[in-house]
Image 1: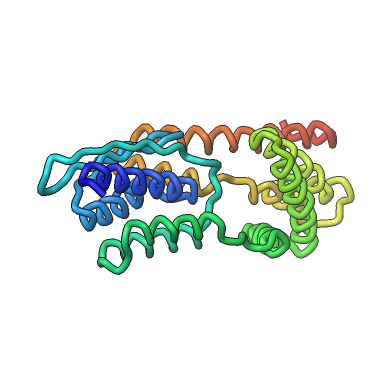
Image 2 (image 1 turned 90 degrees about the vertical axis):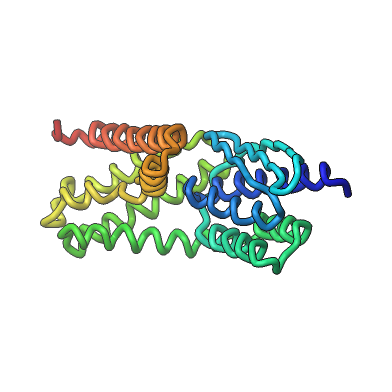
Length: 257
């Protein structure tokens, strides 16, 4: 393999690695650090350009004039803390000289095809977490039950919509709408002393917390384009939650305005 080809292979690997790490929910600073440490091990200096839909990695030889650039498209966002950890562990193994470029490429392919957590397990945890939020904000046991059922229904519909290719924004509106309708049960049937808390927490499971957190991290690190992209994504989804919530109130004739 020529030096030129090696540079091309390194830039290709690093760009694909970066795009995968972005889709798993990593911040720009984490991507930059992981890629830079691997590039140094390969004998290159890496210049990384991160866009909302693509990542470009240019490598320049530390002891020669070899140069290569590769751009990789970012796939659908599939946040995974497990995949994030495995990808970071991979970068350290490469940086410590414990893994070659070809081996690292094979590991990325394996990480891509890791089985996801059981949808039933995730659903149970989401339901329990949202009901716990209700209690945290002062909801009584009946309000917690209402929130749990609202979350179960909304999250189930969300999974069905996404599995059938429905747009995420439309999906969030539908899920929020259904959860809001169930959440009004405390007012409709006068069965809880904290009906307002039941309504307010019935849609919390839809809040895009990771985009909000990552956008602030990107802003602090100077990645303003990524900050704006992630922040706008989070704001739009929050607006969709509000739209579904409002439609639910109107459907149930709730005088909240």
